[in-house]
Image 1 (cartoon, protein in one colour):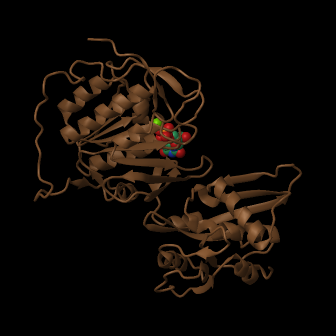
Image 2: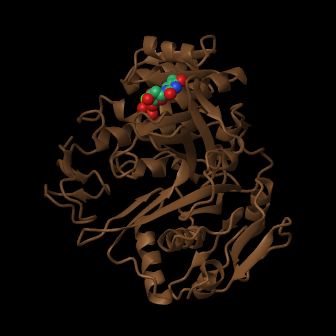
Image 3: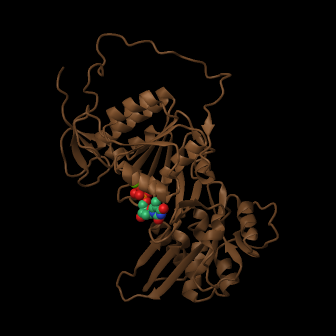
Length: 454
Ligand code: TYD
Ligand code: MG
């Protein structure tokens, strides 16, 4: 067979180049192009003169039941999976090192086993003795989970094929290697080929597979995006190191809603489920202070209340600092620009710090007004009315736009003892849950009403 030419793959975007270059033509990233031996060097992969086997076609309409789902027994995990793990499906769990992926999956493995599933946990990173030690710490010493420490995927698949478990957990995909691929474990080609083998195995053999994936410093699962395309569900396990809260977020789910979150707390005995995240995020709240605003947000299908904190201080730098934790830096610049252009409040010559308390990350534009309120409150040194929540999207003109699920946000606020809410004009609110509402058409009116200035 003719030798296939070596190719060069960009590890950031997966683009294929004929020759090496310092910068990827496709995504313009530097130092991401690496040499790889192409896939499909085995016999029978290229189309020859012979015709292939006919494939079976079936009707879309069917009486057959949808693929079964199995509950994990962990309500927060089930919620993120869309109501349980679908058998014969593949999921990817990504997260920073040390965030708790292995802990979560060992607990999930034990919980699935308790629900009657046959579970195999394969670690490419830890010795079985280490996993046992962790299980002991988690109080799961007697869980009916089969363990293995192995990185050779061919051997792993052979065992999975004979054992035929209901669920196989592979920790992590970056440590697995296939002897048919001529590059180091963790390289783009190895990760892609290993993920492909495991996903095909899941589909053909009706085994649910959960892969653990490491995250690059840019926050994406290492290896090209193609692994995320291959699997049915992509979950990210996030959280701040200094905080005990951990959030499992679904960013893709072929069997349920994406953007759903599950909230956990890292304790001395593993991860504990948090059924009421708002209460937890607001639990160590100080007395109302300038710069602190409670935002009524929605994560997936559930309302979550969080505190947004801002600090504005005189700066001695020619380029004042803009530091953000848990919110998009670009969006902060936009809000600062709108405040400057539309209500004449400038932050020039001042450092601005913005923090979402509790270590949660917010990406909803509905938090715009709460962020603006926190910035204004910090700058003017005026606290916003106590026991009130704020939400609303800000447009570049300074007008406030209505947001979705206003009623759910208000109900959650009421449940947690808030009495009033500052909301955009035109929100669809059936039942304000007994909250005093202050609808606002734009930023100017908001400034006027809340801070008594224009
Ligand atoms: P781990 O699951 O090993 O992280 P990952 O697989 O994502 O790299 O989690 C390790 C961290 O979790 C470690 O810093 C210690 C902490 N931890 C606890 O706080 N309590 C526990 O019961 C366990 C098992 C770990
Ligand atoms: Mg781990």
